[in-house]
Image (cartoon, rainbow, N blue to C red; front, top):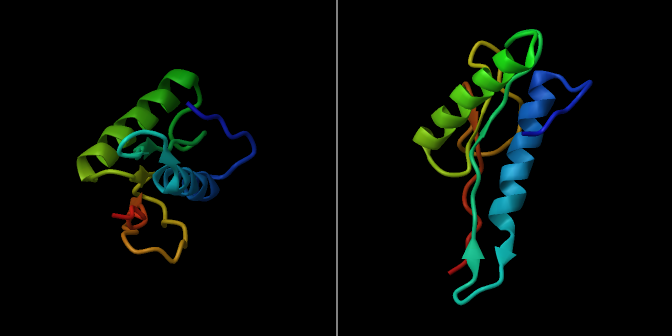
Length: 103
């Protein structure tokens, strides 16, 4: 769980996308090298709830939605406009970027 005080929902989603991109781009040692991806659900207060339980529940629902949509996804509130990232794969609620794996 990552808490981002004084961060709006669009900026939080942009940061989640960046985090997913950074994890995907990193190569971890091993034979063969290990590549990881993460799926993230983003929630914000007060839109998704005023207490920790409501916020965690909203983020958890979106995290599972991100996992169902594929690896390396970040999902935020579907009723708000998605952030402008200039990346392929940005939908109304989901944002991701193409894999950067090298063969």
